[in-house]
Image (cartoon, rainbow, N blue to C red):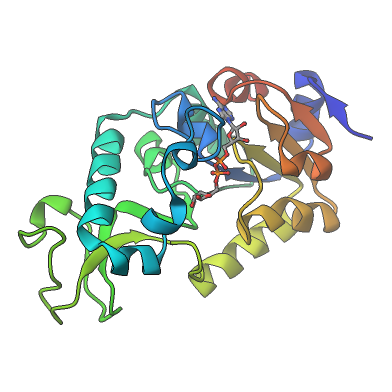
Length: 244
Ligand code: APR
């Protein structure tokens, strides 16, 4: 049975858990001022075409356009600070035998708040080489000049170190996330629409292995069907209450 709007039921699940896995999406950073992707009016994909801006084909068609779009997003992220949800998750990690944060976000805000998160979709501050020659730069200030810059190792285009549509997630990282999901007692799912796989499969995987799934989201999501408890509210409001 699913319980909706029940912070106490969610707290009860967490109080009995030893191993907690957290899956976050863009909604956890919304109150830090970073737009989500699919919210109807404010989401990035309501305003921009993901196939032009977040796929290898799109990049190859117009590298400067895509480079400038990511530079704009990097600036948004650089100005953003973690919110109460990021901080509550970072301090909760001390209270459980295992507490793993798996994020689809590329903004690095979990790390800034103090959680060593698994960044399934990469990082927006990282730059890699389109030809996958092995070049990686973690400081955008140190990139070669140009728009977009060329790889100092092989001369191909440099690209944002994020996972684009049509690309595989890093296998070892995904396997690590799947192991965490299958071993946790509770999976807390915060601020994701649950439309992008394989991340969206993690709550059902956790549930199949006996975990309770707590969803925090102000709106309905695809993951409601995998939930034991649904808390209808925003991340910064509700996540701290779960760990009070
Ligand atoms: N607190 C919690 N949840 C929120 C908030 C908030 N303040 N504001 C919005 N949300 C919820 C929305 O209701 C929605 O369910 O966050 C979710 C955001 O969904 P998406 O925009 O689809 O983001 P996400 O699920 O992270 O997207 C997955 O899609 O384009 C890709 O690579 C990108 O990692 C991203 C992936």
